Image (cartoon, rainbow, N blue to C red):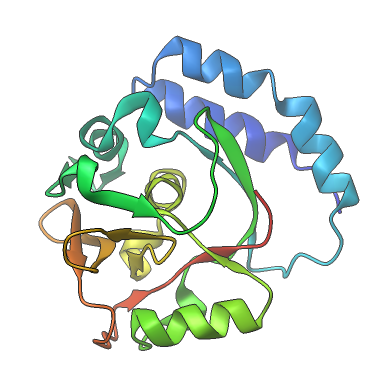
Length: 192
């Protein structure tokens, strides 16, 4: 697969413009060569998929700070969740990292999060965690098209799924996993 250098630098610029700490940006910049190598090894990314996205985990900044970097129509995001109640269903890094071959959730619109999770696993893909869903919302205009159910994470106390959607501004909240919504979808990736 071809490495898109402009995509890499555009994502770094977006993080800089949203006041992401310099230490995080420098760390991600240092990974450019490994991202390029990974992209050359990946075969067959679907044309509408995003080749890669930089992820800043909540262990670095916290959900409040991460959502404040998400912007849509000049409105910045807000978090309604307690970070201590979020558990990831997949193993992720504590330091910033990249996800690859990302589908924005468009393919899962109208499916309940539980239905989408089954379909995503059948495709050999992995549901995005809350941090990865925030990264998708930060680096793309996905929220103008659909809300993002982050089935790679859940709220421990209620078994609810974190969800990012566009209200009056980008909002991080939660919802039940068995309810369908024609404006929300579950995004996925193939590699971390």
